[in-house]
Image (cartoon, rainbow, N blue to C red):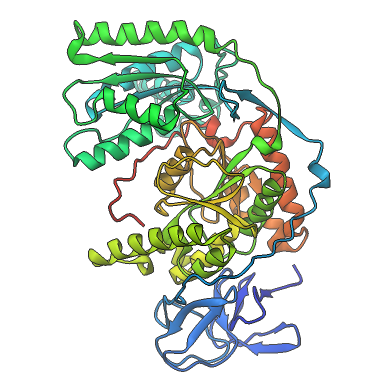
Length: 547
């Protein structure tokens, strides 16, 4: 790698270290030379000018902090010398001009998806089990184990086999510490009974009763959104009977969301059943009968305009905003230019990028809805003594994301540069082509849960530190910001964007490669690692403070 540092925006007063740099080393950027007064680990930043206490730190062309004590040029940015700060924002009438990217490489491409009766196209064909209340979680667990094992959807057989061998070795008096783990963990291939059923998914959760009625309604609308999801072929509902979230309420939310909803909907209420075993057997049998019909659905060609792709980052590092996120952003621009939908969520991680998104909004009502949701979220955080400034995790900070505004400015890159076509509150469905902003926490699972609820049929998830997050109904494609991570955690990483950091590929080249993978994943030609691992994370947001 010839280039050691990077200035992200011409107006920045920091440079990003692309490799580990040593104190006393002289580094060049453009026509300037900087002598380092500290060691600068890769992914971290150093100041290019001396700053006095209270002066602004600029990165990505926006304010990302203020210095807490005087700093010299060449010194490392740290949590001790820099505190989060962001520019104020407001609506200002201006016409945003967007230059769409060249889509000629994709103009004749299609993907093979599952077309539903309302015209929407899914990228997978799942059967969904959901409980209206946490009391039914155990019954779901019993059904999951039975159906996954017998129908070919389990991924745990290799670990069961490994444990079985350990137990046998112990019984025979062998030393289990020297057991041959490599051979014992050889993956077991399952044969699915239903070729066109990509999975049977279970939405275990901790809600439905015991909280506020508003919590029950939010959960009900979330579960309705998953039932209505284009990737879902049919639904089995388990209810206790006495909980806040009544079955009638769930059905009402479902019909409000989609008046023409016509998927198979099987409902079982335990307090009306003869016994728990009878409930479980009937739920399995009736679901099995409908799986036979759902298995008859075949993939068919669909235009790329039918794609709805969510953009997410988690376990982020100092390279996220300069490799994986911008590459995903270019992919987002390609999808928008092709007539598809793109969802950008994580409102706490848009702090500091608000003005750009406001200026890109297609009209004033869209901009003001975004401002209203952002301000309400931030106010709620401050009411309990927190705030967006407390968002970076210890892992983020350790790998160069010192303030929330730095994290946000880089996270925002995932949405590309297209106009903001719509702003959606939690669980609101995406209906307009183009880029939509979706109000969710930054928390990985809460954000992916919310993005799927708004209709994402695939999610692009960038990570610099590594995270195994997935989703029950929306395949999650994992992208590493650096090649070291891709090599170390190849079991969860699908795409390596480290070539951007190494200077061997451009953001645009990698963005096109990502879209090509998206098309193949949407067609079932490649299976993302999170799907292969049955990484089915689902956490409803109770609208409390979650960053």
